[in-house]
Image (cartoon, rainbow, N blue to C red):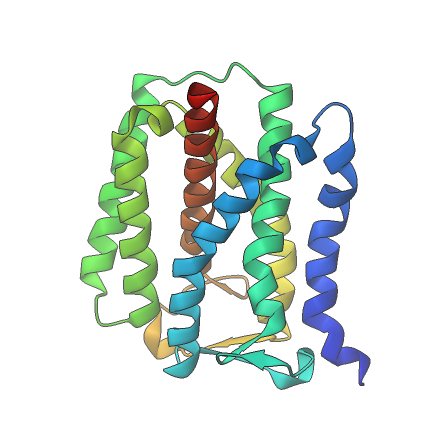
Length: 231
């Protein structure tokens, strides 16, 4: 096999290696929280994989066979399936590190205003670009998640933490996704997006990441609260 075919798999391994090694560290002890993380990751993966399959089959994006091993399941390379497990887990590492080192992040009224401004802007852009499949789906999904997390008291109180983790996650995001889009491993049909790139990354990908993380973190916190109150 040409080593280039391992590119996507190698990038996933790079993204997960450090968080996985640190999962058993005494400070974070992430392994103790797997019972909440794993269901959150799997439940979130369902809608994301569903739209990923649909997008791949309808030409919204495609995968370069030069950089994947060639094993496809429902139009997606197996590496793409792992993406929705490994990348959220890597971001959970950031989330737990923030929880450990900054346990008292507070919510201020001004922050709530900013959150709802972001919600309105994303919703407006979704309606404004309803004819562009990736833009519409990414922005409508983000507006829905922003609405739910803003209305639910439990997640609303955690929004500053969610956003902090999101902005920190943008650093590895630009590194890994930058390579994926620069080679490219993933190829986008620009007729279905805004055509605005953050270096080589479609701007929709950043909104996609925000939705992915907020959904993961929201379910995770909901499971923790449910089981702690039950037992």
